[in-house]
Image (cartoon, rainbow, N blue to C red; front, side, top):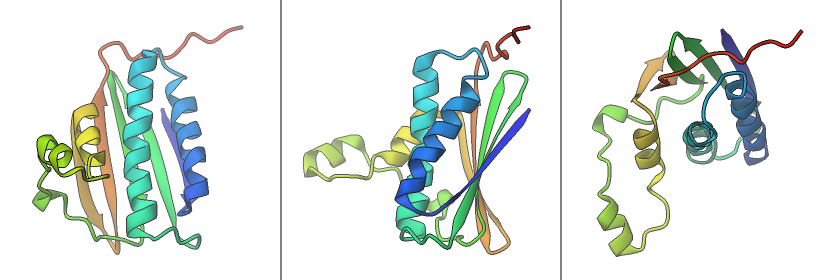
Length: 146
């Protein structure tokens, strides 16, 4: 099943993103810890796009799609207006260096990489698609109540 949510590139819209991801994941039997990790990872990508790529421009929008296939969850974040980030050349900073320098920020993609099984970004037209994949060993829908 596929679930989609479109939102404007404002920081106020990010709460709706978290709510959408949580509500969608609650349709399945997934531990609360994993649900929270996935919300955090998706929120991190969306926040980076809204704040850094779009400078919180309310005229711009993004779309999230969540799809489950067997025991896998796929998250796509479509950005029709920005191809600015090159995932292939991204060098993940060493955590020790971030701590030593007291740098605030810079840990978001480390977090996303640690939560997700696979992360990729692909250009599409004038934009890009972030694809996040997470395998869940016991991904099943909640039983419907009659």
